[in-house]
Image 1: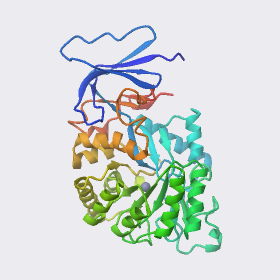
Image 2: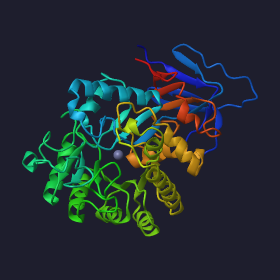
Image 3: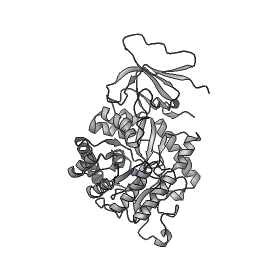
Image 4: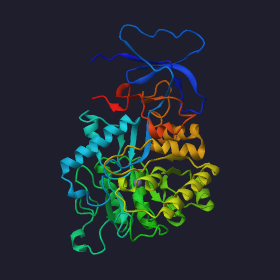
Amino acid sequence: MTVRDLWLTGGTVVDATGRDPFRADLRVSGGRIAEVVEVDPTTRPADRRGPGTAVEDVTGATVVPGFVDAHAHVGILRLHGQAALPAPVQAALVFDVLADSLAQGFTTLRDLGGVDGGLVEALRRGLVPGPRLLPSGQIISQTGGHGDLRGTAVDPRRDADPCRSGQNPGTGAPGLTLPMLLVDGADAATRAAREQFHRGATQIKVFATGGLLSHGDPIEAPQLTEAELRAVVDVAEDRGSYVTAHAHSPRGLQRAVRAGARCIEHATLVDEETVALMAASGTSAVATLTVSEVLRVDPASLGAGPVDPGDAARLRESAARAVDLLERYGVRLGCGSDLIGERQHRRGWEVALHARLSGAATALERATRVNAEICGIADEVGTLQVGKLADVAVLDGDPLAHPDLLMTARPRLVLQAGAVVARAGEVVR
Ligand SMILES: [Zn+2]
């Protein structure tokens, strides 16, 4: 295949730098954005055709940066019982989730627990289509914490050495997906974090409070001691990386921030004191609104049992309050779907749900530039600026006026590093 320049012509560009939308033609060359040529819509469009140059006419469409999901779990197909699926079946399902994410316009996923560098290598070699993937490996949890999926009647001797891959309570297929790793004590935490980097993690995820879809660990309870958290942070900082902590409630969240976590996931039950601490420490937050909405409309898709509608409603109200508080204190706020399951086709919901709380322009920037900043890749992706990798989604209609279209429609065209990877909602193979 000859490498050619590609023009996207006639579109309205939302470049995610904070600038208002403008009409421009984009030239892509060598995988990067080579030119953004502003166009006066009242004049005749320039003819961009030429030898060695392809043109995609996207008149009437909106051109945005490829989306970044800052909280994905492509390898978690079921919360319980995933190990009962043969490894090849799990692999096929994970590959399908990856390809489908691309078709939804998501060109980068930060995976917050489950998959490791093996999957990244499959993508890098071009064996399967999928977004740029930033894996965390296994989520580090304490025994009896949010990551302890064992039943209460488990034989503890079977998990005598929880750091040995394949013998921990996370279900999955070793080498493909292993969601959780239980640690107790700072030494175990150090080793667990080192293990994840060895297996290709780009950041470390820890559980610092209880959670929702688990039993036996109250959401208010802090998890992991400050010494355990610091041990993980030390390993990450030595690697030039960082720790992000699942934390809903103030005590555990504040402990994680004090221990040096650079990012907080969910942050659903934060109070002013906690948010002030985050702002003062420069800690980022990733709000995850899709999961509570899916709990409302389709809990079965998450493999969750029936959910008390009152609980789901309270969760949504808390999340909305948290977003408001984080915004008011100027905490850098990204967004992540936190989807799990065999079909993860609702990543775009996160953008639409943030638009309802914060406005569409802010939501689009969160899902592109801000998430790229949080992931530490903002020099390469996240905005449509000359020199950046050409990760682009072309949306029919105007997502700023009608953000809900991100819940119902897929991009007409998706570019990843300049290559057309999806068209009309289907991956180009
Ligand atoms: Zn998650």
